[in-house]
Image 1 (cartoon, rainbow, N blue to C red):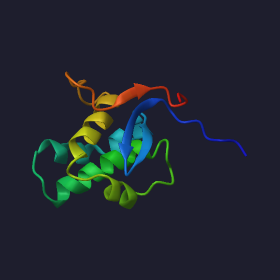
Image 2: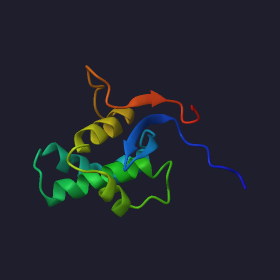
Image 3: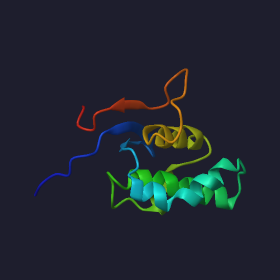
Image 4: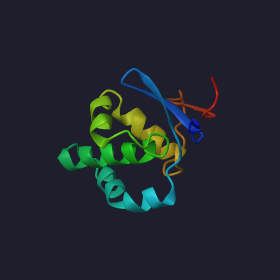
Length: 112
């Protein structure tokens, strides 16, 4: 059986595991446009949390198609939400790269 090669991206740590987050493809970006608008509102309510889960899950699903939104919701918490969202949006070209200390490391997916 062939092992699926991961798409290059940034490596983040969730739930004690490392995940390579690739850039979102246009199909995913288009589907998540309402979620991006919700995130821009700056509120921290149920709709914003659902939007955040959807965006993170949408990005991760390119490399981890069996990962569910519920699993993402279990691994993302308020202590890592900002960093995870920043990594997802930056790698996808939807937010400028943050200055200062890096929150995620850009590496090829097949790097050790």
